[in-house]
Structures are given as structure tokens and as C-alpha cells.
Amino acid sequence: MTLLVDSHCHLDFPDLAQRTGDILAAMQANGVGWALMAGVTLDRFPAVRALAEAHAPLFAAVGVHPDTEGDAEAPAVGVSEAELLALADHPKVVAIGETGLDYYRLTGDLEWQRERFRVHIRAAKICGKPLIIHTRNSAADTLALLREEGAGAKTGVFHCFTETVDVAREALDLGFYISISGIVTFKNALQVKEVAKFVPLDRLLVETDSPYLAPTPYRGKTNEPAYVRHVADYIALERAMSYAALAEATTTNFFTLFDHAKPQ
Image (cartoon, rainbow, N blue to C red; front, side, top):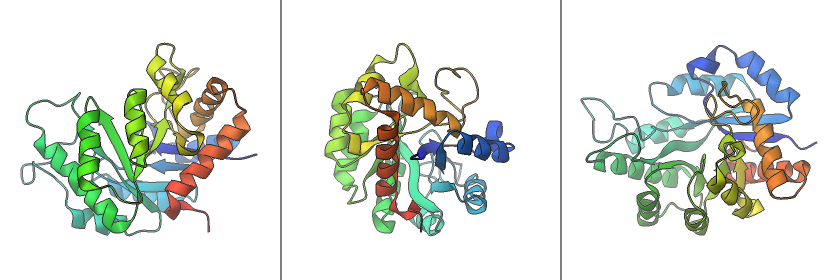
């Protein structure tokens, strides 16, 4: 049986941080072989990296989430290329992110957010590791900045995708992968369902974004990587294909994109 990969989760968050053993056991029981933990702030990153170092099925990404406004000393950017490159220089750190733009939670002059995104793109190009993209109410600017900066041969993934098919097409044209979360199982998530059927099979990933967005039948509860099985199962049904074929494709895609995570 082909094992799945949860391509995006946050196991260092309070709801999950004290349950690592149970989480790993549940992954194994549900055919989930690996999980990638995305960074959200630099001060939290050591905990993310430590989990990846301690457990073979776990990988890490380093980045600053666009919702994080920085501090008094560096409010405009809050991170440098040098910092990202130093932290990314580690065998279990396989990506830069999550990074991107979010115009939903924050308002006003968000040029600092765009500049931070540029810093992440440039760091990813230098270290040759893919980007994990977060975009919310900001697709046009997200795509424009990726074009301006030239994301490079490694590209990356638009995680927890909730945009339109047209946005997905533009991201794919830039060389990016699309990752679908448990939102696809929600009754009214018609746009996400459409995208899940549209994305070419060789550019599709699955994720939980745990501890958030638990799929049906766990909606409203704390999410965890084992539940990515329900995401994959639902997408397979939507695409009229077998679960085994969907699992094989998405796992192959993960290790193609995140090639620093390939089993030795």
C-alpha cells in the first residue's frame, strides 16, 4: 500500500505539541507515512526543527507567516534572507515557508507584507528549496510578486488552496503545485471541489493544515495528520479514481517537489 504524505501541518501548536507519540501512531495506523511541518515565526521554529530531528517521518519548513507583523525593531519585514538561509541549511528542513500574502486578517498599508514575501522568494531561489505559499484575498498580488521575482526552478506549492480554477491555472502555469485540505469535504466548498478535480494529477498534493480544518467526519474537532486519509479518499471519489492511485500520485508529487525529503 502506498503511504500518504500530509504536506502541511503544525505539530508544534498547543493542541498537538503534547501528543506527538499518539499522532505518529495514528499516522502509521492510517497509512500516512510522512508529514511536513510549516514554520510560522522564527521564534517558534526551533520547536518545529526539534520535532523533525527527533522523528524520521517528520520534515520542517522555515518561514514567517504573513499574518505575523514583526516587532518594534523590524516591523516592515521581520526576517532577512540571511536568517532564512541559515535556518534552512539543515537536512530535515526541506522548504521555505509558509509565506505569502493575506489581506483578509490585516488591513491598511501592507507593503511590509509584500516585502517579506519577496525576502522568502529570494531565499528559496538561493537555497534551492521550494516555497510553501499562503494566499488569502490576495491572489493577484501573490501571483504578480512570484512573476516579478521569478520563483525559480524549484517553485513550490499553494497550500490549503481555496481560490478559483482560474487562479489555480495561473499558479500551475508558473510551475507550482496545488495542495487541497479538508475543506474539500465541506458541503458548501464547491469552488475547492472544482479545483480538486481540475488540477492535473501530477501537480496535486493533500494536506491537513492541522490542528485546523479537520475534514468530515471530524469537522469542528482538532485536526491531525492521520486525517489526511479522509482528504485523499474524498478527492479520489470526486475524480472517479481509486484511493490507491490518488495516494501513489500525491506521494510521488511530494517527494518530487520536496526532493530534500526523499528517503535515502
